[in-house]
Every structure is written in structure tokens, then in C-alpha cells.
Image (cartoon, rainbow, N blue to C red; front, side, top):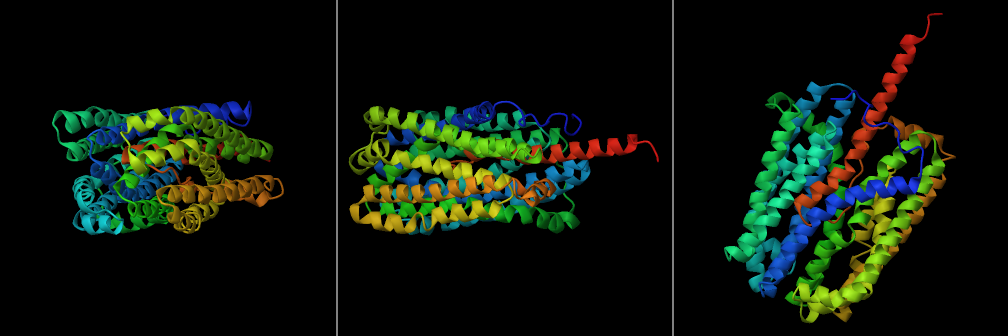
Length: 508
């Protein structure tokens, strides 16, 4: 393994900020788009079965799965952050012990969560508004997928441990392996074996099994896992929980808001739920570049903050905002022209078709402000204000969703979608204005920079990408968690250089 700091030098404190942001976000978008595209194709396959109930079932089940994945992301961030700190300090065996203890507890927790979902799947889905055939199909799908929750958490955690030791490429390959397996097996089981939604569940189970095995092999290849010590389970888990619990809290915001929107759509029938689910599968593919910015601008901001280049921190925020505007504008123009094709691809009718037309024509513009929120969150997390990120995430999921959707319900499913979009406009605007205020005040707040450089990897950025599958969450973490590794190794590099100067200083 390369010496600490040898691979992660401060390469972002010089050169064009726009070029750095484009390169970082562009490469991250490739991975995100690959796995999100598989999710979208899966939705298209189900929609072509000609059953609105099955299409709506995916929407209902995804609302619950989103909550599960939020917990998994938080646990994974906790494991990687704490072990990254020990690796950065040169304590490999300590990192191995913590990882082994934390992964054991994580598997127990996720197994309980998966089992609880399996038992209570039907009443939970009914609470979200599922009824009749859609309830039956969603229950079957959710129960099958929930049994594999420990498997995907094993894959996610193991993949994160590979990133901790710098094997980002190997980690991303695990994500892509899962996506490829799902891409191959989905049409085979759904159409070839005529299993429909059950086939999609079987494909997901097999994909997660492959991901867990590949991840476990990768982590063991880097000697990051061993048999856990019973006496260390609780103390190690407490250390991880200090990071994981806030991360879980923040990550629950987006799916919690999505649950409310799904419930509101359910009041207008299955077509409305199916249309909303179709849009939610399109969005991550259409805006992969915007979502990739969440993790990509973190290292750029962090390095320039550490170097005292506060002007470049502000320039990074401005460059990211320009990319958001460009991406949304180009996508908006394309969808206005291609909306009829999109409706045909999803075999949408009635309310589902109307929702897709509204999205392609007007409400897609709200993603300009969603992108602003994502960029602002990354700035808050990397500049020492993570509570701002949590506040804006939950603000959008509650005050930015509930009252606007309630008001929109008077005008049917189109009103619900419009209400959700208006809330995003409000909180996206407030978040980006606050982010610019933070970056402008960096010059006059030397304590802020001192606080940042003293932080441990516990301040790893918390993602806010609306993932629709565990594989997508893993791709997201490939971008987001790398920031913590940069901080860890960069800090250790400075410590090594300082020690070297002290030892080379001639005695007085």
C-alpha cells in the first residue's frame, strides 16, 4: 500500500476550478448512471407487463426500501469513517478489529430490521396507501427483498472498507458487478421465466448475494476483516454509532418525504402511484451529473480550505451551481421534445401519463433547486456545518413537502406533484443562499478552518441522493465516502512532514 499521503496530494489548490469540478463530477456520474439505469430498466420491464397494479407495487415497495437503505447508508458511513481514522493513524489492526465488530453488529441489526419488515410488510404498505392487487404484489416483493437486507449491508460495508484503504476502483467494480447481474437477470426472470414482479425480486436477491460475496472477498483481500472479539462488540459499536446515528437521521429525511408523497398519490388510484414511481426511476438517470456533485466537490472544497484558499472554496460552489443550471436546462429542453416517447416507453395511461407530461414540461424545473440543495449540503458537510445539512434535509422533507402537498391534493395528483416541486424551490433557494453566506465568511473566521483541519473522519459527508436501490446507494457512497479518505490521508501526510522537519532540525 502506498505511504500515507502519497496518493492524495493537494491537487485541487491550483488550476481551473471548473475543470476540477467537471472531471470529478463527470467520472462519478458514469458510475451512478450505470446503476440507476438498471433501476429504470427494471421499472420499464414491469410497466410492459400491462398491469398497473404491479407498476404501482414497485412504487409502494420502493418507499419502504428507501427507508431501509437510509439505515444501511448510515451504518456504512459509520464503519468507514471510524476505520478510516485508524488507518490514517497507522493502526491497521485496530481498524480491522473495529470493522469486524461493527460489521457483526450491523448484520444483526439489519437482520432484525429485515425480519421485522417481512412480518409487518402488509400493514406497513397498507399504511402507505397500497390496496388490492397492488398491496398483494408489493407485499410479496418487499418480503422477498427484505430477507436479503443483511446481504446487501455486508456488500456495502465491505465495499466501504475497500475504499478506506484506497481501493476505490475495486469498490466501484463490486457495485458494477451487482448492476450487471441485475441487468442480465431482470429480463430473464421477468419475461423469460414469466415470473413478473416475483422474478424482479429473485433477480434482486441473486444480485445482492453476488455483491455480498464479492465485497467480503475484497475486504478480506485487504485484511480488513477477522473473527470478531465478543468483548469488543459493544465498545467498538458505540464508536461507530456516534457517526452512524446522525448519518441515519439525515439520510432518513429524503425517503420519509417520499413516503408522504407516495401516500398522497395513493389517494388518487394506482395510475397516479405508477406515474410517480416511473418519474422517480427516471430522475437519477437524467440528473446523474447533478447527484455526483454531492461527493465530487467535497475534496476540492476541503483541500482549498486547508490551504487557506477561501476564494477558491467560493469559486467551487459557484462552478457547481453553473453545472446544475446547465444540466437541468439541457435535460429540460430534451424532455419537452421527447415527453411523448417517455410516456410510450413506460406504457403510461390516464393519470400516469398526465404526471409524466407535467414533469417533462414544468416540474422538472424544480430539480434546479434540488441540485442547489445537494450542492449546499456538500458545502455544509465539508466546511464544518453538518447540522445545517441535517436541518435543510428534514426541512425539505417536512415543511417543504407536507403543507405544499396537502394544498396540491385539492387539484388531484398533478397538484401533489406541483406541491412537491414548490417545496423544493423554497428549500433549495434557502440552502444555496446559506451556503454562499458560509463560504463568504470563511475569510473572517479563522476558527472555522482550524476546526475543520482538526476534525476526524467522523465528519464524512452525509449523502442526500434519493437512491432507489442498494446498488445505487453503493455507487453514491463511492463518491461521498472518498472525501473522508482524502481528509484522513492528507492529515497524516502533514503530520509525517511535520515530524520529518522536527527530526531534521539541528539541535540548539
